[in-house]
Picture 1: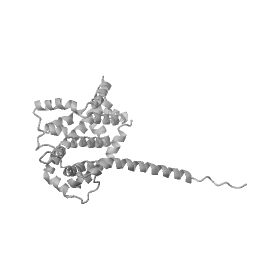
Picture 2: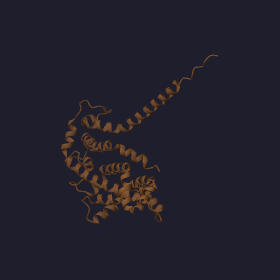
Picture 3: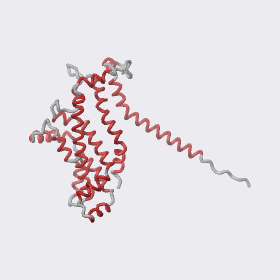
Length: 287
């Protein structure tokens, strides 16, 4: 009898490598689609007005105009507007993260009549467009004398956000019941359970919630434009309304350069907190 050689495992390895190659190709293509608009924004900020007006489209600048970024920075009080945006974003992101965590903890761990109905109404409120509540909100703040102040963002932060409440509720619902039972036996109330046990355990969702809330506020144009004067306004309003000619025509290359500098802080925050952000988004739906 002749000995038979064992089957070769080269074929499965080739298939695995081919599948990985296809997967990486798809991921690179999708990444390119997402980065394409930002790349075009950078190129626009490096062109001259004549190149932007050229037909057909002038894809790459003949001579890179680095001074566009310096001009965009110096034309307005860029750091002042950025400071205003940072103050508002930090106030709102911090308060709304904590208030949403507290509300999410209540929905996840406390029992009360009508809890499911209230949670359904909360989730349903996410379907309301911002424009519907904009006029009533402005009238309320005007009656309270809070126009041209940062108090609206404080109150919005204390009021929690439905989407963030949902994230925290999903995360807290997945924690073992034994944690709070042991704390209750030791004489700890629900407020202590939240601050001492549940909140320290929820750092992935805290990170994700803070990044999301900060991005919302940093990129908001409508509320600052409506509620704040020019001196107290944010960088988003300045970028959209300042870089124009005397005839009101946008200076596109300067506006693009300012937009690139405007986006950089968000990118840096995400790069720093990306591990917690991804972990929070992936674990908030697991039970």
